[in-house]
Image (cartoon, rainbow, N blue to C red; front, side, top):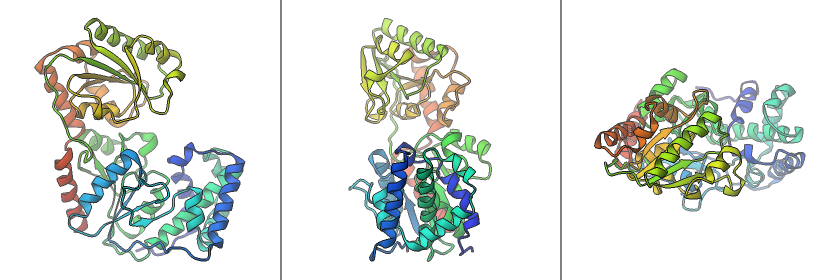
Length: 422
């Protein structure tokens, strides 16, 4: 069992771990970098700090502890705590108050770093930086000061993770909601040095860009679509199907559809995609369906451009998708997306759904599965009010998500019991 953290081994890993995460949405300016250095210095000068110790053999590392992520992680934690002591590890500075946090492990935020940075951790980070060519920092966007700060902060977090997990044994089981996120990456990577029992959930439909390479040894998939995708894209990763613990499946019924929801996900449409959406929209309008363009929550509807702006003038309503699609969709709804994985939530809510993305567009795993299984004539596929069509969508939903709700909880509990006995 490895009990030494070697700067040479960590240096390249630090760069890789910074490719995905919330920090990509922050300012990348020189000023932001300098403020980051100040936070690290304040942490080093702090005379007293709470010791970071993970002393349970079962932990859940939460990269996304707010909104849907908080509910998702809370559901997982409740299952883990049924039979044994489990610790939830996350950054309390950004976590929702309703999430019970056992170990406050810092993220890359300045407040967290100013509380937890140590001389030992920063010294280790400087040793890692000395072994990293400046050219390697080019994989991090932003001003030089920002890139240098981000590297030192993340390398420090590897050392802090090592210290926090130093009392762990080979019986450690480390789960996370998203192993590729910059927050959880160091903890899962370090845990891999101590144990073979690390596993990641999927908080969204995986894609090559955001989910590969998988850091954990196991992946907890929604259904056969993700299982088959991982077998192809990450054959060294073991996969276990647990489903969606955060949702409950509704069955599609055979009543005529009443609503068409077109989901915008901040993509730029090509001509074929715009034509496909317009064809479905015109057919739905002629049938008397209420039509809505559901805009991604990061985009103010008034700022829509190009094809999306043109489509917005043709629907009955333009709304901003601030809540889960599962709360507004249902058996009477038809949901059409270009690349949004919210289609999965719609299918689980009993809606009919389809993908209009052009063949050249790279899609998340489950959205790609829908595109490959749907027929060419999407108008008839989506709008024909027959029981046969309902059965098709129920089967599609089951292929993407095997279990939901209590069934998923039982599948997770079974996995954890077997996992802890390996």
